[in-house]
Length: 111
Image 1 (cartoon, helix red, strand yellow):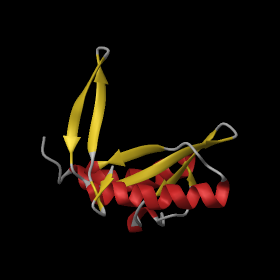
Image 2 (tube, one colour):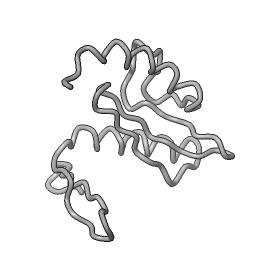
Image 3 (spheres, helix red, strand yellow):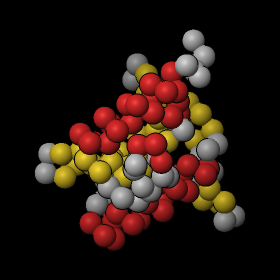
Image 4 (cartoon, rainbow, N blue to C red):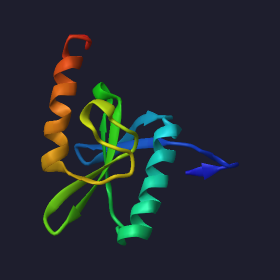
């Protein structure tokens, strides 16, 4: 939601048939989503996307279905995985590229 030129975010989650707020904030992420979603819509005619957020890797993607294949568009560069912001990649290629990044991060994450 936009108000006064600023993006305000409330993430809702469904649990047991009821909807409730799950988190507030993260307007920077939503601004990136909006920018890349608009680019996908104008370049490829994509209307429906899903957000794939991977907080442990500090990265997020927009996902879209194209002829039965899932494509991911990184919202920011993922240098170690050689994924570039705004450049779509097949999920079958992107997820394996993220695996070494996740393995390196494993020792840094709380247990």
